[in-house]
Length: 304
Image (cartoon, rainbow, N blue to C red; front, side):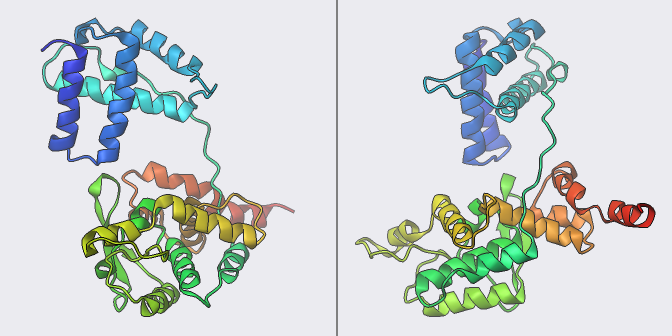
């Protein structure tokens, strides 16, 4: 076994079984490494040089599909991250190849975090009707996103039995299947309770589609009724438009709003990191430039 394709297959098996990564992560590795293999050819690992990597990065930077779409800096970096992980795996298994430490990532411009202030949040909540089951569901969804800072994929996966409304908390497995405790506000619990009180079913998902009932067994139906991430995104976007909010509002903007509110009110960054489920503090630090109370105090004290 000395061809790249064979080693990539073994690496993907290692990621799945040895590292217990999510299916989405494995799919991404397969996609990114597949693109490198298609460009470079099915050669031997020891043939890869730094000059090859330089040419590959030029290829990624100049890449354009049949619809004229290019690859952003972040996406290009994902390709390189996958390649570095693969090379690291090869070296760990005593297979001669280029050292991954020699490959640097492109510098990405600092992210600007978009979030909603308190007035915008209240406007968003207020426009969602509560006189029917869909409205009760949508209000509970938006309240939950803001109260917990959940990723949309995490919200979609929630089941009724996970949620402890008395203790106002539940456990979830986020990225990398890492468990964390998530807390609910009193207000959020009330809206979830109001919604569940109106439900006339025994389906597992916390949030379901209230369209026409289809035929099938209970387990199949239960999963078919589970809302998709796209539906959640449409619910949030629709409410924001109705509220007259000019910003592009997504479930992730509500996650940003959750984190920003905590930091503005004095929460320490390590606690926010845990609540968001970030594996690295660096990811959480994107919020500090909009919530730096010390800099605000210095400005107020010394600027005249």
